[in-house]
Length: 357
Image (cartoon, rainbow, N blue to C red; front, top):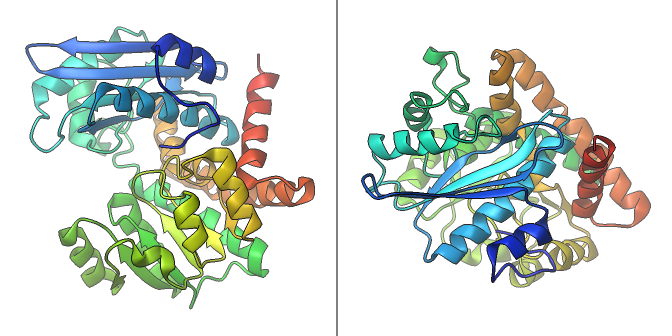
């Protein structure tokens, strides 16, 4: 979760107004135990598409904060990727391992359907294609469904490919070559996206280190790709060429940035900057190239978007490959205007929305 200059707290509608949200829907069903929030940020460019995250939030305020920030990020992700989509997101409060049931997912599908297509859901943290299959029985406004049902399946491989493209573009900008062989890359988060990114990097000959709180995943990915396991938060003090945050957000804060010893930050996690303005400037002052998260992790969104008009994997990969050129464009804009890369990307995204109002 990243912060802007404004702190999210207090009345929901005031926060919606501050961040530019159109609608927030609270969902409750006693029979299934469903407690969910759907946030629709901006539908200027099209219906709001964004995944559903199931997480054990410590309180409702944290859940609201997360869904508001994530949905806002989806608006800019869609805009900068040239998609005819708005931004939305949903969170289900609960433990995905112990509290998720078929009935709960179907009931959530009912709530999604009640919005009449203004919000289209997909999978996110704590979700999988089977869950989307259950949601699909109640509404057509869902993407990321299994390939057997005409969907695109798990979007993780395409998300990872987009991050890989953004990483290579950052390398080209920083070092004059996008060759990542022999570069030391630390991938924080060995989940579906992280593992696919490790695969791309290993195949190119990069020296890959992995970090995760899940010991089983660490061992699996290490065994499969020969990646070196690094445990704990000492990762921020290690010498590396590229830091790739691919777990939850806010790993880039004043403390970690001051410790980082890398040339490039390029990862899949959403909302990597704890404070968009302060931390963006800190990274810039250290001379580290930061590839904006909502740009380079857009591959998954591009992939599920293609389901709306009939899934075409090659077309999705081709459009995701363009993340390379867009990343270069943004890095050059930031350098020319002496602004942070995050601000440069945000300006381009906001301009596209403004031009379509």
